[in-house]
Image (cartoon, rainbow over all chains, first blue to last red; front, side, top):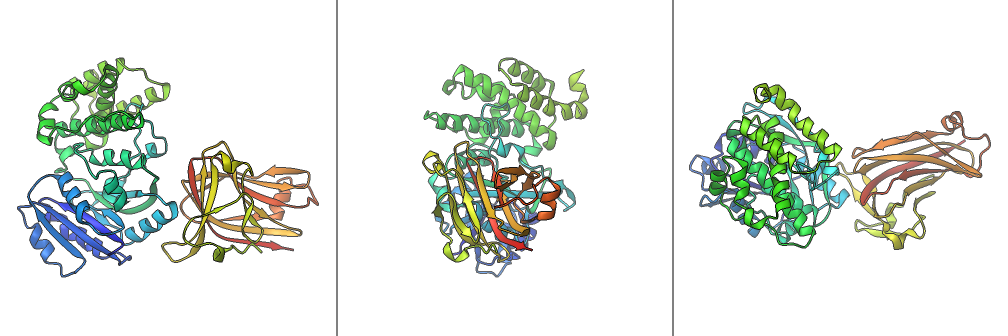
Length: 333
Length: 160
């Protein structure tokens, strides 16, 4: 049994796969395997993997079922101590495993992650990803929530803990946020300042391609927060019982999306979720460059007027709106 | 002086008592009554990613307690070099204790990368340490936090 297994889910990702695989096989820490879950790819993914003659690569093909099903399938049969997540278009630094494993040993955290250099599809450097400032000041009541977020492309976590908390769940496009909340409520998690690799940002990113996806991601991240609060309070969670297609169909605006869960939410939760979701969306739009609509902004104003904000929270709202005013000034005239 | 007691610890956490030595003239200092109040520490002997051995000190501190690494500087103290890292990055408050008083030194910010802290008798004198002060102890004081880890790599204390 290797100490560490890379977990690489992939769906039609042949374009950058070689670059990713090469970076995994070049790790200075050698005691690892690579579990590739091909989620029903119809491109040349299988051929790319078969081109590698390395016994450490374990390739599994399944019917297309989405990211969560691919990740959970892997968790079911993996046999290792630590799981190192990687996506099929990202690149690991050669010492990623060595540094992360040592950091986990030092901190005794059950899950860790680190920083990455953002690159475009051609590999051009866009900059260093922003430090997760909220990580050390988690606040579920804040709008939007300050999350205990570990950047997912370079997450490393103990397999037994991932299994114990129930693996990944259908918090669409915010599966990572939901996972981080549950990990943080279980044991120590830690964020390393070391740069562990390169994270590719490109137009085909699902939340980049559509504002609907952005709304889905923003909403589910805040619903994950609400569920974290409910767990803390010993209450039942709001079930993630919509499919991605159903969620996207409702996400033409926030009211219809949140309304889909109205039966399970109190009035106070609804009010908070409205404000938190739309502000998360505007926050995400500042780096995902979603085209924010006048309706989104009007919704934000109405939603914010229904909640009480601390002075610190008001400052944060202004910080979110300032770049939007520069990017889309027509919204504010 | 200052050798760390690597051989006394394994890679499994071992609870250490307040003021228990972890090296020659090096103790973990915290309130002797704090153990019952949610403050405790354990020590492990670890090797980092480049193969260097260090003592990992895990602090659990759910109370408003200060936690300190204390170094007995002894008579004729000339200089002290202390190599360490912390997670999360912490502000650490160095303080010199001596017979009849104490003196704060400049606050330090320590993070995940190992740093070597240098303290000299000459600098302390320039900072206001009374001439002829006896029984010098250097304390690196760490404010309370639910949990934190300190990696102590080495201590070297020299005397005139």
